[in-house]
Length: 110
Image (cartoon, one colour):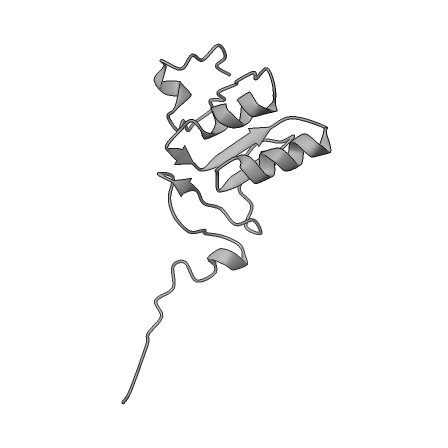
């Protein structure tokens, strides 16, 4: 876990993989959404709150392919997986990704 991340650090805006958690503390929900969206990436996000109004706000306002509330980002075969912005386009896994790696032949005869 890495804390005390300032805006001048690459970790503030970069997408980090591995056994690393970037932890940000926000003064309020507006700041939390601003921090979450202050990146050109958008694979997954996590927000921790029991308040249902805040949960809905995170779900609606965070720009990411995945928003996990009160849990870490995970990948299961039944969940669509993928990002937005520079984290990718489209989904794999689940019914949404079933044709992701299929070759479809289109035939048209006039």
